[in-house]
Length: 524
Image 1 (tube, rainbow, N blue to C red):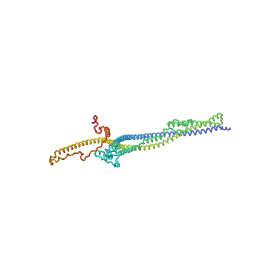
Image 2 (cartoon, rainbow, N blue to C red):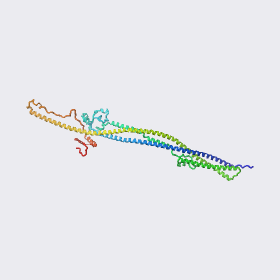
Image 3 (tube, rainbow, N blue to C red):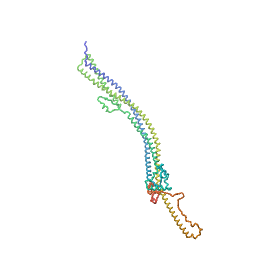
Image 4 (cartoon, helix red, strand yellow):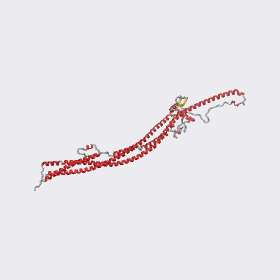
C-alpha cells in the first residue's frame, strides 16, 4: 500500500491565509450587519424625535406669535396714551408762552409814581414783594393805587414822587403788582403733576422691548430645521471630509435615506467580497483535499492560486473600508439621535421659558391696565392746570386792558377837575368883583346920604355886603388827580386801537377825545 504524498507547504499556507481572510471577512460582515440593523432603528428614532421637535417648535412659534401680538398691543395702547399726553404738552407750551407774553407786556408797562405808594397788598393780584420784611419800610402799607383819585397824598410822598418822576428807570411796572411766587407755585404744581404722570407711563416703557427680547431669546434657542450632522469620515474613500462639509445638506429625511442607502450599498459590496472570500477558501480547501488525495497541480495552477491569495489583503482592505463607512454612517445617526434628543430636552426648557414669559406678560398686561386707568385719572387735573393758566392769562389781559382804561379815566378825571376848577375860579372871581363893586356902591351911598338920615333909621345901611366863597361840600376834600404823561397816553392809544372798540385821540395840553371806533366818523 502506497503512502500519499504530503501536501505542498505553499498550498497549505495559501489555504490557511484564505481561511483567515474568510473568518475576518465574516466578522466584519457580521459587525456591519449588526450596525445596519441598529442604524435602521436609530433612523426611525431620529425621524420620530425630529417629528416631535418639529411639532413642539410649531407650538412654540404659535405661542410666540401670540406674545408678539401682546407686545404690539401694549405698544399701541402706550402710543394712544402718549398721543393724549403730547397733545396736553402742546397745549401747556401754548398756554405758558401766552402767559409769558402777557407778563412781559405787564413788565413793559411803567406806572407813574403818583399812581402808587407800595405794591404790597395794593391789588387783588397780590405782589411778589408781599413779605413782612418788604412791607416794613418807610412806605405806607395797605395803600390802594386809587388813593390818588379818592384823596390827598402826603407831602413826603409827593416829594418822593417828584424825584421818581425824573428817573423812569425806577418806575414800577404792572408786573410789580403780580404775585410771581403764586405763579411759580402754580407752574411748579403743574410740572410736578406732569412728572408724576411721566413716571407712571415710564413704568411700562420697556414692556414691548422686554417681550420682544424674550421672544428673540426663545427663537434663538429653537433647533434649526437642520440636517444630520456630518461625520469626520467620508461616505466613500474618494470623498474627503472638506468636500463633504461643503456639499449642500438636504432635509433630514432625505439624508437619513441617503445614509441607509449608502450603508446598503456598502453591505452589498461587503457581501460580494465575502462571497469571493468564501469561494476562494472553498477552492483552496478543494485543492488541498485533492492534493492530499494525490492530485498533482501544475506550476500554472500554483501561480494562479498564489495570485488569487495575494488579492486577499486588497479584498480585506475594501471590506474594512466598507465597514468603516457603515460604522461612520451609524455614528452620524447616533450623533443625530443624541442631538435631536437634546433638542427635545431643550424644548422642555423652552416650554418653561414660555411659561415664565406668560407670567411676565400677564403681570405686564395688569400693570398696563393700571397705567391706563391712572393716566386717565391724572389727565383731568392736568387739564385743570391748563384752565388755570388760561384763567391767569385772561386775568392779566383784563388787568392790562383795565390799566389802559385807567390811564384814560385818570386823564379824563383830571380834565374834569380842571374844568370844574376853572368854573369855580371864574365864579369866585366874579363874586369877588361883585363884592368890590357892591362895597364901593354902598360906600358912595352912605357918604352922600347917611348924614341926612336919623341915626336910628335903617341901622343895617352901614352893614357891608356878604362876602361869598366856594368850598367843597361838607365832609368832602379837594380831589387830587395825578398827571398822566403825554407819551403814556399815546402808548395807550395804540393799545386801545388794538381792541378795535374805542378810538382815542390825544391833543397835547388840550383835549382827550374818546368815541366809538365807527367807520365814517372823523372823531370830532
